[in-house]
Image 1: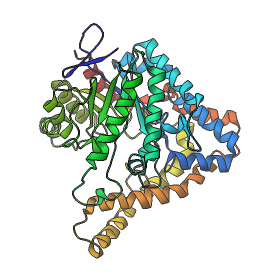
Image 2: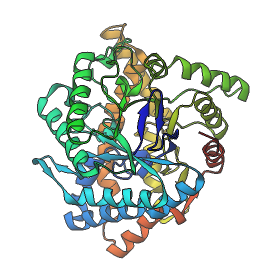
Image 3: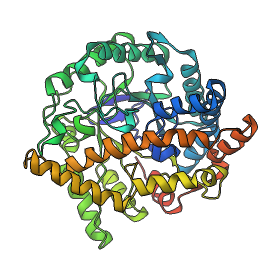
Image 4: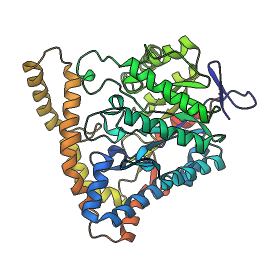
Length: 452
């Protein structure tokens, strides 16, 4: 079992272990740009059930889970040189909102299967609660379509969050395959209002209280595993995060950085500057604790290699976002000629035109949103940060409302198809039917091969 020793992670023999791998986003926590559907997972599941019927919709999502991440994916990741996979999960796989504190065997069965594959092939697992009860942020990646975050202000959600981690601790106590528990992905404690000004101020008292509570609860049951704690504001802010208050804590930043496309040498200097300036890096140095860059990515292959070289220079642990997707930033992506890609082609064109995802263009509609954002600032308060205003206005209007209108359209694409036909379409997600991103994989393999 891995342990923290100073600013390093070591195994039971005291050998230094650098955790370097991938995040398996889009599997037990689906995301629109990864999986192709519009909007949020919850709304899409509801639209599928309404259009196809509960039984066929249930079959669809069961087969999706079966095909998207398999033992073959684990073997591929290990053979490429990684030693860890971060498994993002949605609480809905383990708990029903109408039956809080009662846990679903089906979700644990599926997760157990993945952990066993990783144990068999020699990969560590970081268990990441990516979507928590009540939503820890206002963004789509915690399965939030409402753009309201209730977790930080309602005790019932914090109680359920803590109790679910107690259940994970009971089940995985003593597992050497589990590297540790990533208790919450990208928290944003001061939402919805704090993000609209040009100075975001985390609710540090509440944030630190929640972390101390969940760590204490896990430790009562499982004193052995590492616990990974992310900074506030999407793992960016650490300045008033409580100093390490327990053993075996690792701190995690997310480092989605801009790139300098003029030259590799300039970009390398930029990546080093941004890494050293990141509050997560400074926090880890100040308290002499390990730093894990839990997410980064989205650049070209050369820029990715530059960023990885900086992580390697400063001995940071890292997991790239993401392993497999629909063609945006995955190390492996779906074949554009696959059945699923062809079926979704008209929908994807509409999503691009209307900018219903964070990584789509929508030039024409974006110009409209810019005008509206400007009008809002003009008539309310010129101190409102224009870019933040535009970002969240677009999310609520386009990624939220407009995308929700597309969800029945997505479901209709599968209406009238037999279970065998649906299964054949979803086989597009199987590794053998996907294509590695050559440049990205080369950069990852190069850095996975370096000594710890």
